[in-house]
Image 1: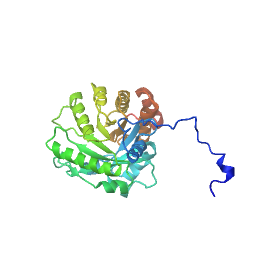
Image 2 (image 1 turned 180 degrees about the vertical axis):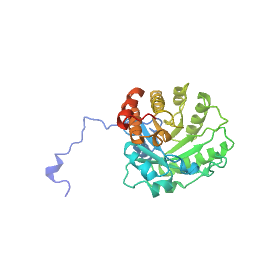
Image 3 (image 1 turned 30 degrees about the vertical axis):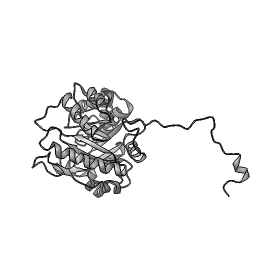
Image 4 (image 1 turned 90 degrees about the vertical axis):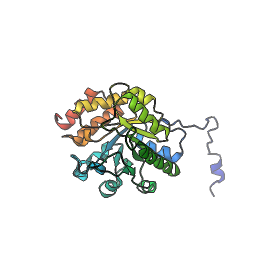
Amino acid sequence: MADLDGNINAKDWGLDTPQTSWDFPIKGAGQLDFGMRHRLARIFGEDGHTAMLAFDHGYFQGPTRGLERIDLNIVPLAPYADALMATRGVFRSIIPSTVDNALVMRASGGPSILKELSNERVAMEMADAVRIDAAAVAVQVFIGGEFETQSIANLNTQIDAGYRCGMPVLGVTAVGKELTRDARYFGLATRIIAEFGAQMVKTYYIDEGFDEVVAGCPVPIIMAGGKKLPSLEALTMAFNAIDQGAAGVDMGRNIFQRVAPVAMIQAVRGVVHDGLKPAEAHQLYLELSGGATD
């Protein structure tokens, strides 16, 4: 029997210590259900920050430079990333099931670079994200674009499905050539995405007003890496984003298109989690890469 006399008196009820009501470190997530918070914690970790590796570009670009062979170019980077952002096809066909990264699945798409990119649709059922053990799904949102309403409908479809099964949604701000990249635009886009219920927003860094964009968004903002920059510039951008309130970075080309991508992702991780200044992170990159100049 479980409660023999010898065990009863050994129980410790902690009568002098009130039960802890755990504060949740992720912005805007304190009132979400357990499953949603558990998945978010896999992405952001104990410090509330994430170094995410994006390599979902093939869903509309095909085998772009650096992603010709994901098994050779990306899999070696996985141990240094908190989260991996890719399509379900790549997760199932290439990424080892033994990885312990949080998985963020691309959940919208349709047109290729040969067509109007903003005309996307929901690209997968939420049940498939659950089957693959994803930590979140990502939906592109084209605020101000020709198909703005359709992309918001895509977002809301996945948010509703996510609430039903405890799956967070990452809303990704897409910027067309005709849209101005400034604090007013990104403040609008990120706030709209959060207002509809996305648990995270991915957006671009801007030199003026990024801190206001972050402050005006009630959920975590993750900085998008964008086009490849010189290594010091990319690390400076990551540092500035974190310094101004971003909860993490989601870099792709600024990592996998490097001469030494393993060195670069470790330098990025140093900025995100260890508070390295740009010069310190760049020095780490140079040391780990053997002096790479890209």
